[in-house]
Image (tube, rainbow, N blue to C red; front, side, top):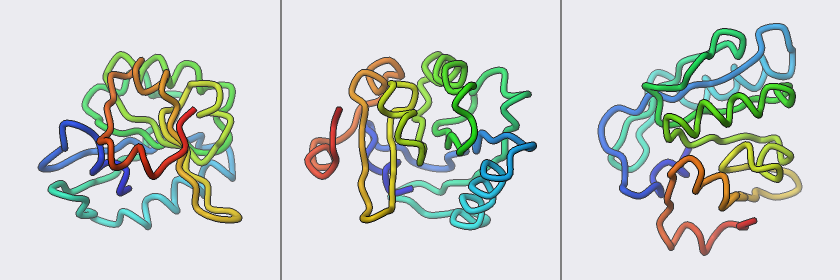
Length: 143
């Protein structure tokens, strides 16, 4: 979640994030639950408070009203439509699915094994009109 604090201009106040998931996919459900637990009833990030809202991929439609969308596991076939919706609304997409970032359908990828690595797809960031601070970009892998 700290990734949000490196977006430029720096967000302030309440940030509602979408957790895009597939209710019929066990891995997607588990990751959505894990993200909800991490955020709890509100997580302070920089000068912002982040609150999460689950959004079933089948009813997503658009992502307007959200600043960030977590794209959970099990959504590979829907990643293209999620990217289109995110780009229209300038939503930062974050996923643990490395392929989502490598294909340019997610802006940020976070993997934890064997060590934490954050990857930013420049083209996806540009398409969604997302900019990061230079200090953050020095700490991550850009593709």
